[in-house]
Length: 158
Image 1: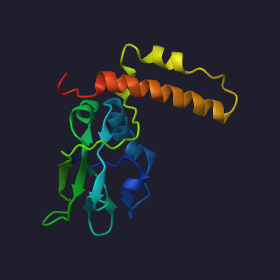
Image 2: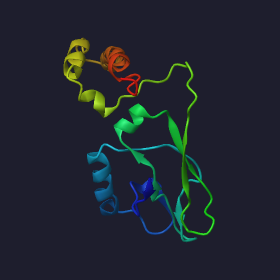
Image 3: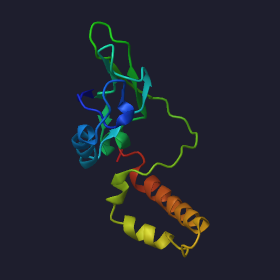
């Protein structure tokens, strides 16, 4: 978590000069190469301003180990008091509920030794229509959920 003095995309700045690809390219590449994800934010939309330009340059980036080992969390973007930066605070949700959660694919699953075999085995349908693709994805999703429940649930205890 910190002040990266860089934006990831055009949605991270309003007003000021137009966002150029070369402004975002290096930071985007580092985030992708390090397999980092930005935690969701609530509160203010932008974390820095000079009263004319508003940017989101302060971020909480986490890797897959954080996402697997930590309970769900979000970043509170608070009102700046004496700086042109908004302070960030991470709220960790310690409550666990038994609600069904949507399936999320994390890149670390692709590193599992059985991953390719699971995908090949469950990609059964000949692809001719969008419905065929949908059926294949549904089949693969079910198998990957089983892998997730077997290998990646309760990683802390393991």
